[in-house]
Image (tube, rainbow over all chains, first blue to last red; front, side, top):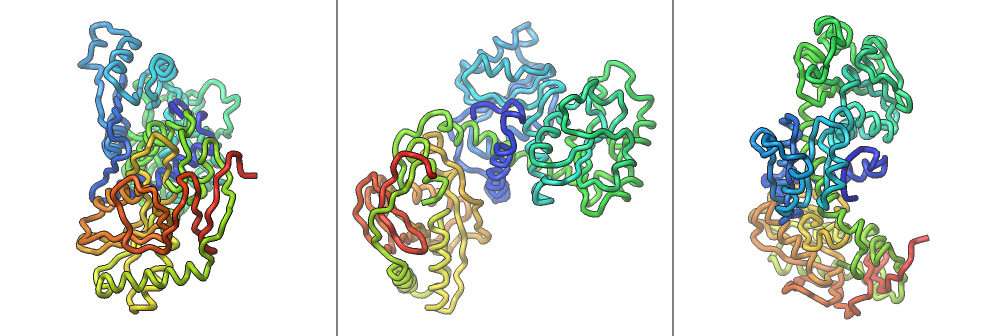
Amino acid sequence: MKHLLSVDDLGADGINEVMRLTDSFVEVSSRAIPRVPALRGKTVVSLFFEDSTRTRLSFEAAAKRLSADTMTFSVSSSSVNKGESLRDTVETIEAMGIDAVVVRHKSAGVPWRVASWIDASVINAGDGWHQHPTQALLDCYTIRSRRGALEGLRVAIVGDIKHSRVARSDVTAFHALGADVVLVGPPTLLPPSLDGWPVTVAHRLDDVLGDLDVIYLLRLQRERMTEALIPSLREYRSVFGLTADRVARLRRDALVMHPGPMNRGVEIDAEAASDPRSVITAQVANGVAVRMAVLYLLLGAGAELVAPVPELVANA
Amino acid sequence: MAERERSAAPPRGGIFVPRTTVMDADDLRRAVTRIAHEIVERNHGLEGVALVGLQTGGVPLAQRLAEALSEIDGTDVPLATLDVAFYRDDIGLRPVIPEAVTDISFDLTDLTVVLVDDVLFTGRTVRAALNALNDYGRPRAVELAVMVDRGHRQLPIRPDFVGKNLPTRFDEQVDVSAEGVVIGDVVRGRKP
Protein backbone atom coordinates (compact mmCIF):
# COMPACT_ATOMS: atom_id res chain seq x y z
CA MET A 1 0.00 0.00 0.00
CA LYS A 2 1.42 3.35 -1.06
CA HIS A 3 -1.11 5.92 0.14
CA LEU A 4 -3.83 6.12 2.76
CA LEU A 5 -6.49 8.34 1.25
CA SER A 6 -9.76 6.75 2.28
CA VAL A 7 -11.01 4.00 4.57
CA ASP A 8 -12.30 2.31 1.41
CA ASP A 9 -8.66 1.64 0.44
CA LEU A 10 -8.32 -0.65 3.45
CA GLY A 11 -11.45 -2.75 3.73
CA ALA A 12 -12.08 -4.93 6.77
CA ASP A 13 -8.81 -6.86 6.30
CA GLY A 14 -6.76 -3.69 6.06
CA ILE A 15 -8.39 -2.16 9.12
CA ASN A 16 -7.75 -5.35 11.10
CA GLU A 17 -4.13 -5.39 9.93
CA VAL A 18 -3.64 -1.79 11.09
CA MET A 19 -5.24 -2.60 14.45
CA ARG A 20 -3.05 -5.68 14.93
CA LEU A 21 0.05 -3.60 14.23
CA THR A 22 -1.25 -0.85 16.53
CA ASP A 23 -1.10 -3.29 19.46
CA SER A 24 2.68 -3.36 19.03
CA PHE A 25 2.92 0.42 18.90
CA VAL A 26 0.78 0.79 22.03
CA GLU A 27 3.43 -1.35 23.73
CA VAL A 28 6.17 0.93 22.33
CA SER A 29 4.31 4.02 23.56
CA SER A 30 4.04 2.56 27.05
CA ARG A 31 7.81 2.27 27.52
CA ALA A 32 10.07 4.65 29.40
CA ILE A 33 11.73 5.44 26.06
CA PRO A 34 8.83 5.32 23.59
CA ARG A 35 10.90 5.17 20.44
CA VAL A 36 11.97 2.55 17.91
CA PRO A 37 14.43 3.00 15.03
CA ALA A 38 12.05 1.58 12.41
CA LEU A 39 11.82 4.62 10.09
CA ARG A 40 15.28 6.06 10.58
CA GLY A 41 16.22 8.31 7.66
CA LYS A 42 12.65 8.81 6.46
CA THR A 43 11.15 12.27 6.35
CA VAL A 44 7.48 13.00 7.01
CA VAL A 45 6.00 16.39 6.20
CA SER A 46 2.77 17.66 7.64
CA LEU A 47 1.02 19.88 5.16
CA PHE A 48 -1.97 21.41 6.92
CA PHE A 49 -4.04 23.98 5.08
CA GLU A 50 -6.62 23.87 7.85
CA ASP A 51 -6.35 24.35 11.59
CA SER A 52 -5.57 21.31 13.70
CA THR A 53 -4.18 20.55 17.12
CA ARG A 54 -4.48 16.86 17.78
CA THR A 55 -4.15 15.41 14.31
CA ARG A 56 -1.02 17.36 13.41
CA LEU A 57 0.67 16.81 16.77
CA SER A 58 -0.41 13.19 16.76
CA PHE A 59 1.19 12.54 13.36
CA GLU A 60 4.35 14.34 14.41
CA ALA A 61 4.58 12.39 17.67
CA ALA A 62 4.01 9.18 15.70
CA ALA A 63 6.75 10.00 13.19
CA LYS A 64 9.19 10.95 15.94
CA ARG A 65 8.53 7.75 17.89
CA LEU A 66 9.45 5.85 14.73
CA SER A 67 12.70 7.88 14.49
CA ALA A 68 11.58 9.58 11.27
CA ASP A 69 12.40 13.23 10.68
CA THR A 70 9.49 15.63 10.60
CA MET A 71 8.89 18.92 8.87
CA THR A 72 5.90 21.11 9.44
CA PHE A 73 4.35 23.33 6.85
CA SER A 74 2.21 26.13 8.17
CA VAL A 75 0.15 28.00 5.65
CA SER A 76 0.17 31.30 7.51
CA SER A 77 3.93 31.72 7.19
CA SER A 78 4.39 30.15 3.75
CA SER A 79 4.61 31.33 0.16
CA VAL A 80 0.98 30.31 -0.29
CA ASN A 81 0.36 33.85 0.94
CA LYS A 82 2.37 35.12 -2.07
CA GLY A 83 0.02 33.24 -4.37
CA GLU A 84 1.95 29.98 -4.82
CA SER A 85 -0.34 27.24 -6.10
CA LEU A 86 -1.01 23.97 -4.30
CA ARG A 87 0.81 22.01 -6.98
CA ASP A 88 3.90 24.23 -6.87
CA THR A 89 3.92 24.12 -3.08
CA VAL A 90 3.73 20.34 -3.03
CA GLU A 91 6.36 19.88 -5.74
CA THR A 92 8.70 22.28 -3.96
CA ILE A 93 8.39 20.30 -0.74
CA GLU A 94 8.93 17.02 -2.56
CA ALA A 95 12.09 18.34 -4.19
CA MET A 96 13.60 18.58 -0.72
CA GLY A 97 13.55 14.79 -0.49
CA ILE A 98 10.65 13.50 1.52
CA ASP A 99 9.00 10.12 1.99
CA ALA A 100 5.50 10.97 3.15
CA VAL A 101 3.13 13.92 3.17
CA VAL A 102 0.31 14.23 5.65
CA VAL A 103 -2.28 16.46 4.00
CA ARG A 104 -5.25 18.32 5.41
CA HIS A 105 -7.23 20.67 3.21
CA LYS A 106 -10.66 22.25 3.27
CA SER A 107 -11.50 20.89 -0.20
CA ALA A 108 -12.51 17.27 -0.76
CA GLY A 109 -10.20 15.32 -3.04
CA VAL A 110 -7.02 17.34 -2.50
CA PRO A 111 -5.04 14.32 -1.17
CA TRP A 112 -5.85 12.40 -4.37
CA ARG A 113 -4.57 15.28 -6.49
CA VAL A 114 -1.42 15.54 -4.37
CA ALA A 115 -0.86 11.79 -4.72
CA SER A 116 -1.04 12.09 -8.49
CA TRP A 117 1.66 14.76 -8.53
CA ILE A 118 4.36 13.27 -6.36
CA ASP A 119 6.15 9.99 -5.65
CA ALA A 120 6.01 10.22 -1.87
CA SER A 121 3.31 8.47 0.14
CA VAL A 122 0.28 10.63 0.85
CA ILE A 123 -1.83 10.32 3.99
CA ASN A 124 -5.18 12.03 4.10
CA ALA A 125 -5.54 13.83 7.42
CA GLY A 126 -8.91 15.26 6.49
CA ASP A 127 -10.23 16.69 3.22
CA GLY A 128 -13.27 18.93 3.60
CA TRP A 129 -16.40 16.97 4.47
CA HIS A 130 -15.07 13.88 2.78
CA GLN A 131 -12.68 11.54 4.60
CA HIS A 132 -10.49 11.29 7.68
CA PRO A 133 -9.22 7.70 7.59
CA THR A 134 -6.82 7.77 10.55
CA GLN A 135 -9.62 9.08 12.79
CA ALA A 136 -11.78 6.12 11.77
CA LEU A 137 -8.90 3.73 12.46
CA LEU A 138 -8.26 5.11 15.93
CA ASP A 139 -11.99 5.02 16.68
CA CYS A 140 -12.18 1.37 15.64
CA TYR A 141 -9.10 0.61 17.71
CA THR A 142 -10.48 2.39 20.77
CA ILE A 143 -13.76 0.46 20.57
CA ARG A 144 -11.96 -2.81 19.97
CA SER A 145 -9.64 -2.28 22.94
CA ARG A 146 -12.66 -1.76 25.25
CA ARG A 147 -15.16 -4.18 23.80
CA GLY A 148 -12.99 -6.80 22.08
CA ALA A 149 -14.57 -6.37 18.65
CA LEU A 150 -17.02 -4.20 16.74
CA GLU A 151 -19.03 -7.12 15.38
CA GLY A 152 -22.69 -6.75 16.38
CA LEU A 153 -22.27 -3.52 18.36
CA ARG A 154 -24.89 -0.79 18.02
CA VAL A 155 -23.18 2.54 17.35
CA ALA A 156 -24.91 5.91 17.12
CA ILE A 157 -23.18 8.82 15.41
CA VAL A 158 -24.88 11.94 16.67
CA GLY A 159 -25.00 15.49 15.42
CA ASP A 160 -23.59 17.32 12.44
CA ILE A 161 -23.25 14.40 10.03
CA LYS A 162 -23.55 16.62 6.98
CA HIS A 163 -20.28 18.49 7.47
CA SER A 164 -18.42 15.59 9.06
CA ARG A 165 -15.59 13.74 7.35
CA VAL A 166 -15.23 11.79 10.58
CA ALA A 167 -18.78 10.45 10.19
CA ARG A 168 -18.17 9.46 6.56
CA SER A 169 -14.99 7.55 7.42
CA ASP A 170 -16.43 6.04 10.59
CA VAL A 171 -19.61 4.77 8.92
CA THR A 172 -17.52 2.90 6.36
CA ALA A 173 -15.11 1.49 8.92
CA PHE A 174 -17.69 0.55 11.57
CA HIS A 175 -19.86 -1.12 8.94
CA ALA A 176 -16.89 -3.00 7.47
CA LEU A 177 -16.18 -4.45 10.92
CA GLY A 178 -19.77 -5.55 11.42
CA ALA A 179 -21.20 -2.83 13.64
CA ASP A 180 -24.76 -1.63 13.26
CA VAL A 181 -24.67 2.15 12.71
CA VAL A 182 -27.48 4.60 13.36
CA LEU A 183 -27.17 8.28 12.47
CA VAL A 184 -28.90 10.71 14.79
CA GLY A 185 -29.43 14.37 13.91
CA PRO A 186 -31.86 16.97 12.64
CA PRO A 187 -32.70 16.62 8.91
CA THR A 188 -30.81 19.84 8.19
CA LEU A 189 -27.58 18.31 9.52
CA LEU A 190 -27.88 15.02 7.61
CA PRO A 191 -26.48 14.70 4.08
CA PRO A 192 -29.12 15.47 1.40
CA SER A 193 -28.97 11.84 0.28
CA LEU A 194 -28.08 8.76 2.25
CA ASP A 195 -28.26 6.45 -0.77
CA GLY A 196 -25.79 3.64 -0.33
CA TRP A 197 -24.98 4.48 3.29
CA PRO A 198 -25.22 1.28 5.36
CA VAL A 199 -27.06 3.05 8.18
CA THR A 200 -30.40 3.71 9.76
CA VAL A 201 -31.53 7.18 10.82
CA ALA A 202 -33.16 8.53 13.96
CA HIS A 203 -34.21 12.10 14.57
CA ARG A 204 -34.43 11.93 18.34
CA LEU A 205 -31.51 10.85 20.51
CA ASP A 206 -33.85 9.62 23.25
CA ASP A 207 -35.33 7.02 20.84
CA VAL A 208 -32.06 5.10 20.58
CA LEU A 209 -30.16 6.06 23.73
CA GLY A 210 -31.01 3.04 25.88
CA ASP A 211 -29.66 0.26 23.63
CA LEU A 212 -26.43 1.80 22.39
CA ASP A 213 -23.02 0.19 22.80
CA VAL A 214 -21.28 3.32 21.56
CA ILE A 215 -22.47 6.92 21.35
CA TYR A 216 -20.25 8.95 19.07
CA LEU A 217 -20.85 12.70 19.32
CA LEU A 218 -19.77 15.03 16.58
CA ARG A 219 -18.77 18.63 16.91
CA LEU A 220 -21.22 21.18 15.58
CA GLN A 221 -19.04 22.64 12.82
CA ARG A 222 -20.19 26.21 12.91
CA GLU A 223 -17.28 27.33 10.70
CA ARG A 224 -18.68 25.23 7.85
CA MET A 225 -22.29 26.37 8.27
CA THR A 226 -23.24 29.05 5.81
CA GLU A 227 -26.89 29.18 6.75
CA ALA A 228 -29.05 28.72 9.81
CA LEU A 229 -29.32 24.93 10.08
CA ILE A 230 -30.41 24.77 13.70
CA PRO A 231 -32.76 27.11 15.55
CA SER A 232 -30.40 27.67 18.48
CA LEU A 233 -27.59 25.94 20.32
CA ARG A 234 -29.85 25.57 23.33
CA GLU A 235 -32.52 23.81 21.36
CA TYR A 236 -29.90 21.59 19.71
CA ARG A 237 -28.57 20.61 23.11
CA SER A 238 -32.02 19.80 24.44
CA VAL A 239 -32.66 17.25 21.65
CA PHE A 240 -29.20 15.99 20.61
CA GLY A 241 -26.78 16.96 23.36
CA LEU A 242 -25.37 14.30 25.67
CA THR A 243 -26.49 15.88 28.90
CA ALA A 244 -25.85 14.57 32.41
CA ASP A 245 -29.44 13.31 32.40
CA ARG A 246 -28.92 11.33 29.19
CA VAL A 247 -25.58 9.90 30.34
CA ALA A 248 -27.43 8.41 33.30
CA ARG A 249 -29.69 6.54 30.88
CA LEU A 250 -26.82 4.98 28.89
CA ARG A 251 -26.04 1.32 29.38
CA ARG A 252 -23.41 0.55 31.98
CA ASP A 253 -20.98 -0.82 29.38
CA ALA A 254 -21.62 1.88 26.76
CA LEU A 255 -18.77 4.02 25.44
CA VAL A 256 -18.90 7.80 24.98
CA MET A 257 -16.72 9.05 22.12
CA HIS A 258 -15.95 12.39 20.50
CA PRO A 259 -13.32 13.21 17.87
CA GLY A 260 -12.58 16.60 19.46
CA PRO A 261 -12.42 19.50 19.74
CA MET A 262 -15.48 19.48 22.00
CA ASN A 263 -18.04 22.23 22.32
CA ARG A 264 -18.79 21.59 25.97
CA GLY A 265 -22.36 22.47 26.82
CA VAL A 266 -23.49 22.01 23.21
CA GLU A 267 -23.11 18.46 21.88
CA ILE A 268 -21.64 17.15 25.14
CA ASP A 269 -21.85 18.31 28.74
CA ALA A 270 -18.79 18.41 30.96
CA GLU A 271 -20.28 15.65 33.14
CA ALA A 272 -20.63 13.39 30.12
CA ALA A 273 -17.09 14.04 28.92
CA SER A 274 -15.67 13.07 32.30
CA ASP A 275 -17.98 10.08 32.87
CA PRO A 276 -16.09 6.78 33.43
CA ARG A 277 -17.66 5.51 30.20
CA SER A 278 -16.03 8.32 28.22
CA VAL A 279 -13.03 7.16 26.17
CA ILE A 280 -12.31 10.55 24.63
CA THR A 281 -8.78 10.84 26.02
CA ALA A 282 -8.10 7.19 25.15
CA GLN A 283 -9.01 8.11 21.56
CA VAL A 284 -6.25 10.73 21.55
CA ALA A 285 -3.70 8.36 23.10
CA ASN A 286 -4.58 5.59 20.65
CA GLY A 287 -4.34 8.11 17.81
CA VAL A 288 -0.58 8.26 18.14
CA ALA A 289 -0.18 4.48 18.08
CA VAL A 290 -2.57 4.09 15.14
CA ARG A 291 -0.69 6.72 13.15
CA MET A 292 2.59 4.96 13.95
CA ALA A 293 1.06 1.83 12.46
CA VAL A 294 -0.08 3.70 9.35
CA LEU A 295 3.29 5.39 8.82
CA TYR A 296 5.06 2.08 9.39
CA LEU A 297 2.82 0.24 6.92
CA LEU A 298 3.32 2.88 4.23
CA LEU A 299 7.02 3.64 4.72
CA GLY A 300 8.42 0.51 6.32
CA ALA A 301 6.58 -2.72 5.86
CA GLY A 302 4.54 -1.55 2.90
CA ALA A 303 7.41 -0.87 0.54
CA GLU A 304 7.84 -4.45 -0.62
CA LEU A 305 4.15 -5.09 -0.94
CA VAL A 306 4.75 -3.25 -4.21
CA ALA A 307 8.23 -4.47 -5.13
CA PRO A 308 8.96 -8.20 -5.36
CA VAL A 309 10.96 -9.74 -2.52
CA PRO A 310 14.57 -9.71 -3.78
CA GLU A 311 15.88 -13.02 -2.52
CA LEU A 312 15.18 -16.00 -0.36
CA VAL A 313 14.97 -14.97 3.25
CA ALA A 314 15.17 -18.33 4.94
CA ASN A 315 15.59 -18.04 8.72
CA ALA A 316 16.21 -14.35 8.35
CA MET B 1 10.27 -20.12 11.25
CA ALA B 2 7.17 -18.12 11.61
CA GLU B 3 4.20 -18.89 9.44
CA ARG B 4 3.94 -15.36 8.10
CA GLU B 5 7.61 -15.19 7.23
CA ARG B 6 7.45 -18.54 5.53
CA SER B 7 4.46 -17.54 3.47
CA ALA B 8 6.34 -14.44 2.37
CA ALA B 9 9.45 -16.23 1.11
CA PRO B 10 10.53 -16.65 -1.61
CA PRO B 11 8.83 -14.03 -3.79
CA ARG B 12 5.07 -14.37 -3.54
CA GLY B 13 5.15 -17.11 -0.97
CA GLY B 14 6.65 -20.57 -0.89
CA ILE B 15 6.07 -24.07 0.41
CA PHE B 16 8.37 -25.70 2.95
CA VAL B 17 9.36 -29.18 1.78
CA PRO B 18 10.93 -31.20 4.61
CA ARG B 19 13.89 -33.40 3.64
CA THR B 20 15.69 -34.74 6.70
CA THR B 21 14.80 -34.91 10.37
CA VAL B 22 17.97 -34.04 12.27
CA MET B 23 16.56 -34.05 15.79
CA ASP B 24 13.42 -35.75 17.04
CA ALA B 25 11.28 -34.71 20.00
CA ASP B 26 13.46 -36.69 22.44
CA ASP B 27 16.67 -35.15 21.11
CA LEU B 28 15.06 -31.74 21.51
CA ARG B 29 14.05 -32.46 25.09
CA ARG B 30 17.56 -33.65 25.99
CA ALA B 31 19.09 -30.56 24.35
CA VAL B 32 16.78 -28.27 26.34
CA THR B 33 17.75 -30.04 29.57
CA ARG B 34 21.47 -29.77 28.77
CA ILE B 35 21.23 -26.07 27.87
CA ALA B 36 19.36 -25.44 31.11
CA HIS B 37 22.18 -27.09 33.08
CA GLU B 38 24.75 -25.05 31.16
CA ILE B 39 22.89 -21.82 31.99
CA VAL B 40 22.94 -22.69 35.70
CA GLU B 41 26.62 -23.65 35.52
CA ARG B 42 27.73 -20.58 33.58
CA ASN B 43 25.92 -18.17 35.91
CA HIS B 44 26.73 -20.00 39.18
CA GLY B 45 23.02 -20.41 39.88
CA LEU B 46 20.08 -18.42 38.64
CA GLU B 47 20.42 -15.28 40.75
CA GLY B 48 19.59 -12.30 38.50
CA VAL B 49 19.03 -14.44 35.39
CA ALA B 50 16.09 -13.70 33.06
CA LEU B 51 14.99 -15.40 29.84
CA VAL B 52 13.87 -13.43 26.79
CA GLY B 53 12.37 -15.48 23.96
CA LEU B 54 12.49 -14.01 20.47
CA GLN B 55 9.19 -14.05 18.58
CA THR B 56 8.13 -16.41 17.35
CA GLY B 57 10.42 -19.45 17.30
CA GLY B 58 12.27 -18.56 20.49
CA VAL B 59 9.17 -18.15 22.63
CA PRO B 60 8.17 -21.80 23.11
CA LEU B 61 11.84 -22.70 23.61
CA ALA B 62 12.24 -20.04 26.29
CA GLN B 63 9.11 -21.43 27.95
CA ARG B 64 10.57 -24.95 27.95
CA LEU B 65 13.92 -23.69 29.23
CA ALA B 66 12.17 -21.86 32.07
CA GLU B 67 10.41 -25.10 33.05
CA ALA B 68 13.68 -27.04 32.90
CA LEU B 69 15.47 -24.39 35.00
CA SER B 70 12.69 -24.53 37.55
CA GLU B 71 13.10 -28.31 37.85
CA ILE B 72 16.88 -28.14 38.17
CA ASP B 73 17.25 -25.24 40.55
CA GLY B 74 13.80 -24.79 42.06
CA THR B 75 13.70 -21.13 41.05
CA ASP B 76 11.31 -19.52 38.61
CA VAL B 77 13.29 -17.19 36.36
CA PRO B 78 11.55 -14.13 34.92
CA LEU B 79 10.37 -14.86 31.38
CA ALA B 80 9.73 -12.26 28.67
CA THR B 81 9.10 -12.23 24.95
CA LEU B 82 10.54 -9.81 22.43
CA ASP B 83 9.60 -9.03 18.84
CA VAL B 84 12.50 -7.33 17.07
CA ALA B 85 10.64 -6.25 13.91
CA PHE B 86 11.03 -2.50 14.48
CA TYR B 87 14.78 -2.89 15.09
CA ARG B 88 15.60 -4.90 11.97
CA ASP B 89 17.99 -3.53 9.35
CA ASP B 90 15.99 -4.91 6.42
CA ILE B 91 12.85 -2.84 6.97
CA GLY B 92 11.73 -1.80 3.50
CA LEU B 93 13.56 -4.70 1.83
CA ARG B 94 11.11 -7.43 2.76
CA PRO B 95 7.86 -7.66 4.69
CA VAL B 96 8.76 -6.84 8.28
CA ILE B 97 5.61 -7.03 10.38
CA PRO B 98 5.73 -7.95 14.05
CA GLU B 99 4.33 -11.38 14.84
CA ALA B 100 3.24 -10.49 18.34
CA VAL B 101 3.37 -7.74 20.91
CA THR B 102 6.58 -7.55 22.92
CA ASP B 103 5.97 -8.45 26.56
CA ILE B 104 8.76 -7.40 28.91
CA SER B 105 7.08 -6.56 32.19
CA PHE B 106 10.22 -6.08 34.31
CA ASP B 107 13.28 -3.81 34.18
CA LEU B 108 16.26 -5.58 32.63
CA THR B 109 18.81 -3.34 34.34
CA ASP B 110 21.51 -5.37 36.14
CA LEU B 111 20.00 -8.70 35.10
CA THR B 112 21.79 -11.36 33.08
CA VAL B 113 19.54 -11.74 30.07
CA VAL B 114 19.57 -15.01 28.17
CA LEU B 115 18.20 -14.41 24.68
CA VAL B 116 16.53 -17.53 23.32
CA ASP B 117 15.89 -18.26 19.65
CA ASP B 118 15.25 -21.38 17.61
CA VAL B 119 17.73 -20.91 14.75
CA LEU B 120 20.89 -18.79 14.61
CA PHE B 121 21.67 -17.93 11.01
CA THR B 122 22.99 -14.56 9.77
CA GLY B 123 22.95 -13.05 13.26
CA ARG B 124 20.84 -10.09 12.16
CA THR B 125 17.88 -10.97 14.36
CA VAL B 126 20.18 -11.14 17.38
CA ARG B 127 21.75 -7.81 16.42
CA ALA B 128 18.27 -6.28 16.33
CA ALA B 129 17.42 -7.92 19.66
CA LEU B 130 20.53 -6.45 21.31
CA ASN B 131 19.42 -3.01 20.16
CA ALA B 132 15.88 -3.58 21.39
CA LEU B 133 17.04 -4.76 24.83
CA ASN B 134 18.72 -1.38 25.36
CA ASP B 135 15.30 0.23 25.38
CA TYR B 136 14.23 -1.90 28.34
CA GLY B 137 17.19 -1.23 30.59
CA ARG B 138 20.90 -2.00 30.82
CA PRO B 139 21.45 -5.71 31.43
CA ARG B 140 24.53 -6.79 33.38
CA ALA B 141 25.25 -9.27 30.60
CA VAL B 142 23.48 -10.77 27.60
CA GLU B 143 23.91 -14.43 26.71
CA LEU B 144 22.53 -16.26 23.69
CA ALA B 145 20.90 -19.69 23.63
CA VAL B 146 19.79 -21.28 20.33
CA MET B 147 18.52 -24.71 19.43
CA VAL B 148 20.28 -24.79 16.04
CA ASP B 149 23.35 -22.90 14.87
CA ARG B 150 23.28 -23.27 11.10
CA GLY B 151 26.27 -21.03 10.29
CA HIS B 152 26.42 -18.33 7.59
CA ARG B 153 26.95 -15.51 10.07
CA GLN B 154 27.05 -12.02 8.58
CA LEU B 155 27.85 -10.29 11.88
CA PRO B 156 30.36 -10.99 14.68
CA ILE B 157 27.84 -12.79 16.88
CA ARG B 158 28.29 -16.18 18.56
CA PRO B 159 25.98 -18.25 20.74
CA ASP B 160 26.76 -19.21 24.35
CA PHE B 161 24.48 -22.24 24.44
CA VAL B 162 23.76 -24.40 21.37
CA GLY B 163 21.40 -27.35 20.97
CA LYS B 164 23.02 -28.54 17.75
CA ASN B 165 25.58 -27.23 15.30
CA LEU B 166 24.09 -27.93 11.90
CA PRO B 167 26.08 -27.14 8.73
CA THR B 168 23.66 -26.03 6.01
CA ARG B 169 23.52 -24.52 2.57
CA PHE B 170 22.56 -20.86 2.58
CA ASP B 171 19.35 -21.53 0.67
CA GLU B 172 18.17 -24.40 2.83
CA GLN B 173 15.55 -24.02 5.49
CA VAL B 174 15.67 -25.21 9.09
CA ASP B 175 12.37 -25.72 10.87
CA VAL B 176 12.24 -26.09 14.64
CA SER B 177 9.02 -27.20 16.30
CA ALA B 178 8.00 -29.18 19.37
CA GLU B 179 8.30 -32.36 17.26
CA GLY B 180 11.95 -31.75 16.44
CA VAL B 181 14.28 -30.14 13.94
CA VAL B 182 13.75 -30.66 10.23
CA ILE B 183 15.93 -29.52 7.36
CA GLY B 184 14.32 -28.83 4.01
CA ASP B 185 13.79 -26.42 1.18
CA VAL B 186 11.38 -23.67 0.37
CA VAL B 187 10.09 -24.06 -3.15
CA ARG B 188 8.19 -21.65 -5.29
CA GLY B 189 4.44 -21.74 -5.16
CA ARG B 190 1.65 -21.19 -2.74
CA LYS B 191 0.39 -23.28 0.08
CA PRO B 192 -2.61 -25.35 -0.97
